[in-house]
Length: 419
Length: 211
Image (cartoon, rainbow over all chains, first blue to last red; front, side, top):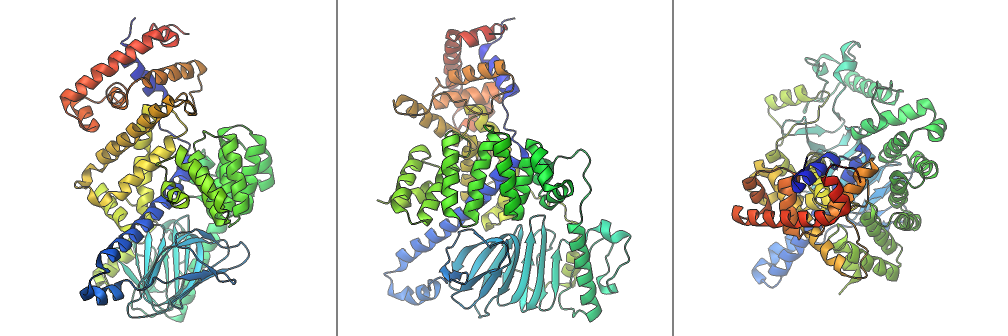
């Protein structure tokens, strides 16, 4: 039977073409998107500030307002060497040591080992830090106009002058242990906001109802779970020593539960677990099976999922090994190609710009038309700039603009190329 | 920002802090959080609308290597314009129209690059073909035929024949009057069918026999 060609073509496309992607690819793309969106927002804010300053610069009457509004934004230095920090640049602390950040107002934020974060914005009276995963200690100098924020997933911690320890895990647990001062936390599950004051601990979410159901409740009555809910430190209440110890016991229980080897979920792939953010679970399953055994005989899907779980958990060693196995055991596949790119990202995040350039170039040679070509090209350009190889960076920027004139790195590429 | 909350706030905060499910927020709330710059809102936007944008891209230009870049570009535009969307409940339509504009621009860019002798753009369909090699071949020829349409004609073709939108809805998405859309659609159909008739693979496929 003769079919109408246009309708037949439309049906054929619908039947054979869809936007479905592998969950791990979606997660990787989402991570890149969030980075770009945050970077775009940061650049947009800076542009607005510069535009306003240009308009007001010539007006005597507004000099006082201008002076108060446009005081020099604070700067920060990173690490023992006090290298100048860069706003919006991702930082990942070494796996074996802390990374202190020294701000020009006297505040100090110390990233625990393997913590991923960046200074999203720096103003005269404060900064915004984005914590991707890990733990940090903060000592924020209190001034009347101080305004600091720590962003962890969907949560925002507003700080005016405070000492605390903040932990944010990609599985979705925010843990704040106050030393002094007060912070205000907003985010999902919190009605309006919550103040957390000195010598208190705030965990979000609290102990899962399933773990509290049958276990004896170690907390005093004031903190007892209500209708299956987990306790939340209430503002204004001074914890008793027993309550504080009980909170620590509860937190330890949570920690122990998190680190126990999980049961293998029936018929649920590692890729599905990664898509839900259950990275620790995937790592636990791989450890239970044996990392070496997993790398030697795991399926391509499992290796890719393990690499993602390790990468998002900050386990560089397992991530690199997994991606290396994908490349060697499944050469020429799209996953092997994307593994090349991801090895560049890992090196990049670890501050190893030289290795990052090498991996990105290898990806561009192996997959010039690959789905990550734009990203690899842009990041190669940025890494060359970090290496102060200005001429190579400029050539890379020109190549980028020729291929991806409206890509996410186009604005930076134009800056590098210059007028 | 609220300072110390009332006792009812404290009670509600304590009651709600329990094994958090993924918070269900509507598009209006999502836009508000995007405007505030919350990373969680960007995540939610991507999870919620990247598949929509991806479908628009991949069905218009084929399963191509650049699809994900175009998806990112579309959603970044949505983020930039989050403050300007008048009707937050129409976020889905807004994402769709942005994705269409981005893919239209991409189609135009590729058409120009194809005219350049030094250009590296050849066929649209390069990556992730169907596992059926025969279907992959037909698909390649279908998209090569679509490459012969201008950006506006191609968009009209995809909206009507691939996505199956009614004429009025398709015209609204394409950003033109119904009369203009009908004209474009007629021209798109005529040109596609002329090209398909001259293509041996498509001619055989059209008759229902395997190439």
